[in-house]
Length: 387
Image (cartoon, rainbow, N blue to C red; front, side, top):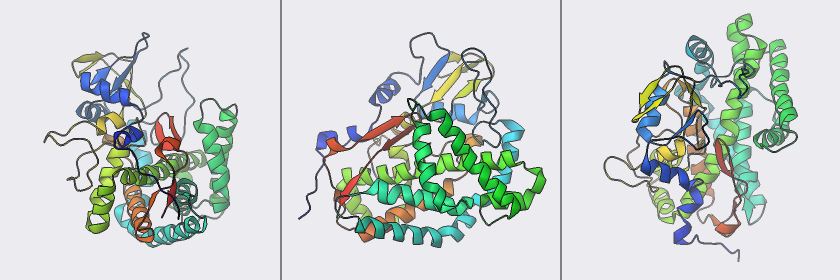
């Protein structure tokens, strides 16, 4: 018989609280300036974060200058690092590919990929790594279909992505160059023969009005915001349900709660711990403090999403909760363009996983799980499961 492990009650919250200090900060003040005299603020309160993200007139998403005053290199096509008219132009180019209606047409493809990866997970034997055999491949394969990216590119992109995410990797800079190079090659191929994916759609619909650099940058932005974020949300969402067996049981008994469960898991795990920094364009008084022009603000989505609700409800996992205005998908003009995609992938992935493995359990002790917190992302390296 395969052994499984129950999480000790006193660890059920801690295992999914990557930075408990942020929650402590939030309890004291909505804005916090770290020691050291740096012109930097950390914001942890939900309403204050929402207020800053909604204020695109006074807070810029453009990367701030380097400490020596140098301007960072431009990123053509980046949806997260543009403001105003340029951001609106790029968003209008991409938006038709990510409507709810368009996602519905992609659902059969997602169901097929999830079923295939569940087969692979089952064949892997017990305990099997949900991250390796299911979460990462599902998000990668779906994105490859959406972008028109060859599936053979995915292992190399995953490897390069790991190097890029590591602040200590000696290969970080070269990996970034190679990673971007993959999308430039994709665009060059699509320019010759546009396919049905995002790159082909942009070239077919807009021709020379959109440059190769912009198409490559858009595809890279979508990949950055989808592959790892979706994989980590599927894995950590599964872990959250395994940590709260009563919630897992409720979802099995009431599958009509799936939409609410997806929203609650997005809020609870908050894999994008903080959104791209904002730079104040003028002095702004907010939360009882004055953020001066040129100062940088980091908004903690994780802490904001764990704020107690006005109705007195706690921040614990509750899949029957009335969906609130969580910030896991951003807010304001930079609200996640792929929100419908993320939600649909999670619905399909969780529904398939729970149906295939009604006895799903952790396949290792919680103390054996290896987590990673590489700003701005929180995730788990491996997630052994049995069934």
